[in-house]
Amino acid sequence: MRRRLDQLVAHPSAVLLAAQLLQVLAWPFLGGSRIGGALLGVIGMLAVGSAVLAVRRTPVVSRVVFLLGGPAMVLTLLEPLFPTSDPVVLVSGLLHAPFYFYVSYAMLRYLFHDEEVTTDEYFATGAAFTVVAWGFAYVFAAIQVVWPSSFSNAGGFDHTWFELLYLSFSTLTSVGLSDIVAVGAQARSVLMVEMMVGVFYVAMVVARMVGLTMMRRR
Image 1 (cartoon, rainbow, N blue to C red):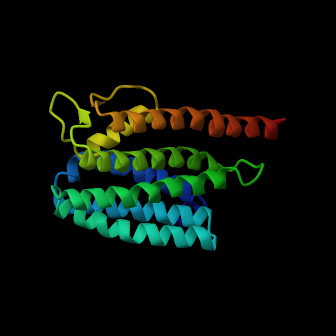
Image 2 (cartoon, rainbow, N blue to C red):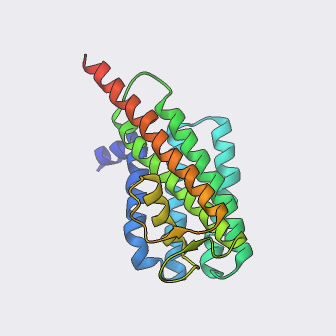
Image 3 (cartoon, rainbow, N blue to C red):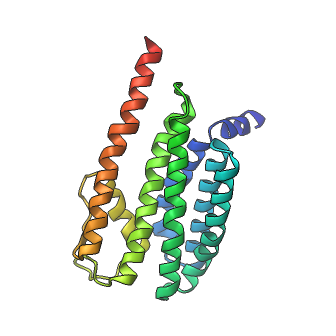
């Protein structure tokens, strides 16, 4: 038991990646209820905050994580209770988006901080990618409040956060499999930015990880 706990502590990025993937799989079953949605959101944010503090424990990172993560977690609890309240959804998106983007920045610095590739850094490559998808999903949620009818599909214009997360993943990975499309100018501009981020992420991070791995083997 002690050995397993040591492995979890040694690989915080793996724990974060597993928590996010489990959250995605559990959302269709728990996201429909207010308590389930709030629970999933809080667990996800705790996993993100714990992982980033484990890999980048500096005063600046700690302050930003607590200053952004604390209020965002409160909104995570309020949003399932007031799902139709535009001010709550808007403020939640405006707090969550910078939190997740800063977490991705901190994890990228963790990946680039030395010339050595560790097992946890491999997991951090995937975790940082999913964190970016989370951040853009909250940006989409805020856009949907400020500019209604920005996203459309056969079901209409008003989409849940989980549907916007699906759109974010399909855009970031450039697979284009989402049935939701951006019809508003503001939404399309943000989607284009996310497409660029996805391409640059693969070119910058994955290429560097592969290069360092080959260098180590040589």
